[in-house]
Length: 228
Image 1 (spheres, rainbow, N blue to C red):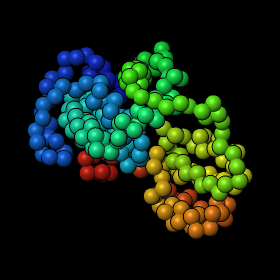
Image 2: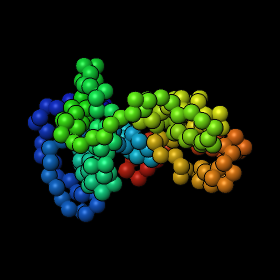
Image 3: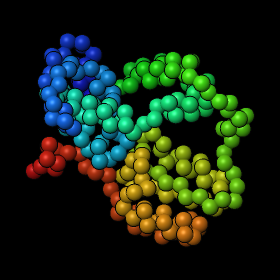
Image 4: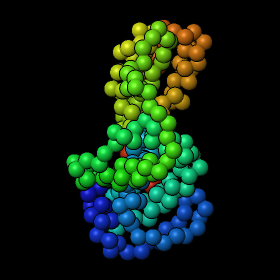
């Protein structure tokens, strides 16, 4: 289904489609492009709540009805402009990672391809940067109380990253929230556990059994959710 949508977008002859802006109600007209598909698939994968919309959205686009996908792409771009401070992002990324980023042949056929890497390298070529310390890649060590949180389905910072962090922290603990994505601190009983940790600075004593009932959100079967 995703391949079908990408093929339609890459063909370059998709019809101009009118769709309604989900935020303003205005009607816009655009052609479906790979950029629309990549933006929605990439950003919606961060959270189970938005990932649940992907199968239906892609199925509609594959059937020649790209209006939901186009509307969601516009909503994403509009909201990200207000949420991400791109200058700060570049200052961090260009200092810490730019010299190790490279386009890879094996990524060329992925949904996003190498476009993000190429664009980031071009920006970092002219953006001011700091100096990365020689030991920057060394793991954090010490007798610090640390609570590390991960979502089981996080596509950006998967749970194995958390395992690597607490391996060097004797007072550290890693909680993996079942079926969850990139941001976990506000999910289920996690706010209470976080507050408890701040009060006690003892990650080991936290009773995290309340997290065991968490589940990923099932995919929408219709525009009103889980229709019969």
